Image 1 (cartoon, one colour):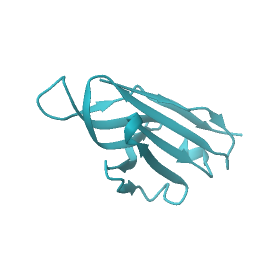
Image 2 (tube, rainbow, N blue to C red):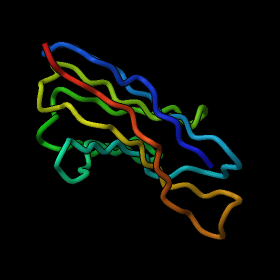
Image 3 (tube, helix red, strand yellow):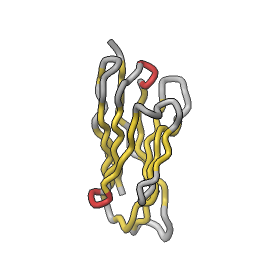
Image 4 (tube, rainbow, N blue to C red):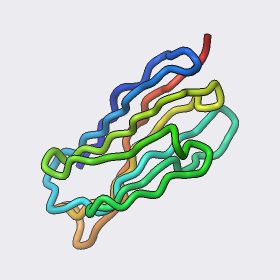
Length: 120
């Protein structure tokens, strides 16, 4: 099982970006999918998560600016980011709880991350 993120870029304050994360491999089902971020010198933190049924959890610091969504048919999760601020600069990681042929139960998988830089 692999998670591959894309969409990170350099953007000016107030700009927008859309991150994507696609899961591939021998996947039976995907439970919760989420986005985390890690800024330089800081711990990795949850940004947003979405269940298979579409229930979402978004942290207060990005609420109203970021939206998480998923396409179950494509095993893909998205993070739409608007009104970006310099403090949103970080490596953004995709996480997914996946039931696959690799283990008898579901496991958490991580992508390698995609860099988002917000700067003028």
